Image (cartoon, rainbow, N blue to C red):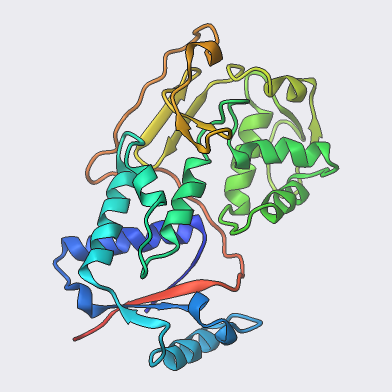
Length: 282
């Protein structure tokens, strides 16, 4: 039995494993999904292994438990391929999916699209929330992380990954934050202060460039082929009016067939929503 929640990180794991099971030739009818969202009365106040086992046993005979049809596994396979693709063309179809069995990946993929640099400022929501938290009174990396995750409906960002993002901002060629001490990587005890640059970053998307993987897409340079447009709520190619004078050309590189889709870090954060998936004997 495998246990997941409804956040982006966990939903990517679900589609990856379903795609792998399909690749191995495991029949869809051997895979059972139990969605706790359909049985709210079974959500415990505190999660534990014992509580999870009890809930699965109770829900196995209810409407919350269903063997996946082949179409659901096929959808997961398409979603995993779209995530690993070197282009963003397939993401929109996954977001608009209305699978009755796999209801959550569509919303997770919408959150994934929003992690692309925004048209207006070149930052993703996870990135701009960090200096915003510092400007709003967070004095160290730990309190900034707490404020960042508090703004997420379904948090998936762990503290280690948030600290790494903060470190890049503090030690960029044009720093967006001031870290104290400045000669160490950002961690729990690192103090943070805003810089003069912070106010300018929202008007200049070419300050520091980017070198980042989002699934199979490698964003690199200062002028990127895709950005998130809040106005249309979709990925868009920057127009000439939104482009800055070129500094370093971007490149897009595909992840190899056996390569990892990019970094992903998540610490355990207790939440009250999830799905259980198991490969069962017929």
